[in-house]
Length: 97
Image 1 (cartoon, helix red, strand yellow):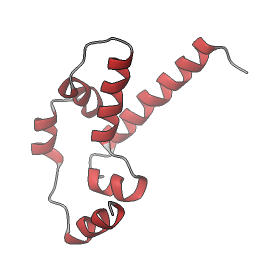
Image 2 (cartoon, one colour; image 1 turned 180 degrees about the vertical axis):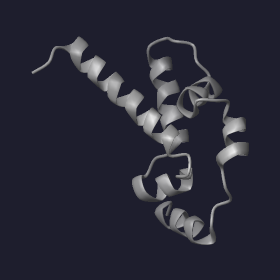
Image 3 (cartoon, helix red, strand yellow; image 1 turned 45 degrees about the horizontal axis):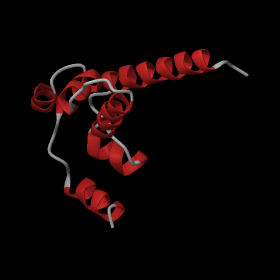
Image 4 (cartoon, helix red, strand yellow; image 1 turned 90 degrees about the horizontal axis):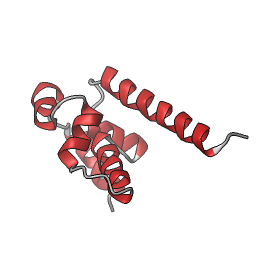
């Protein structure tokens, strides 16, 4: 069993690895993540910003997105985001009902 500090350090390391993995897989679109796992980079950004707010740390969503995307969100979108296929959109809409 680990103490609280070690547990937090392990969780932080896992978060950093997840963000690095997502950065390495820019080919995987957010809609694909949503369809397969029920969360995406935007969700992770929102969770990060919410965790900051819960701890009294000032952070807006754009700053959280930059942490997760590794660059401003608008830049990431222009460089890497592709238009979702009709099939991906249909699958997404089915999970939202």
